[in-house]
Image (tube, rainbow, N blue to C red):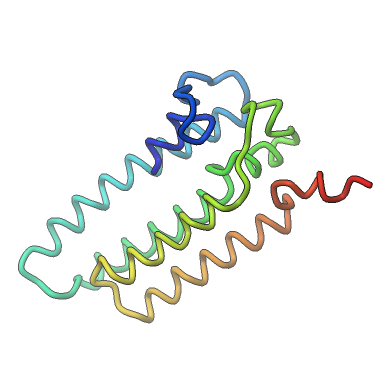
Length: 158
């Protein structure tokens, strides 16, 4: 998803990478956030691959590392990987910076996919999954409260 997010400015319509645009602080923060998430995801993938050979549960220290990484990336993604929120963080409008922005449907779908993958595709214990789910809820809720949700400006116009 991180490669898609920085490759297309408009969903599946036009290939215009945001990685080629570094001219404003929100774009720099957005691009660096995706680079961090992609590169750290590769590191976590190799950690999980090496830790889960012939075992049915993760060693505790690996589990803590993975859960901490997922919680950090979830919070990071809600703040810096969402065009609406990163623009509002820098007191700009997303259309002025990125030319377009998405509603929260892709962000919410990403958060659900992260929680589903951690629940089904990893050997993380249930009580650790609760921490990941709570981080998703708090990260989305607090950033929505702080920066409003996309499209709210259109709803408040009378």
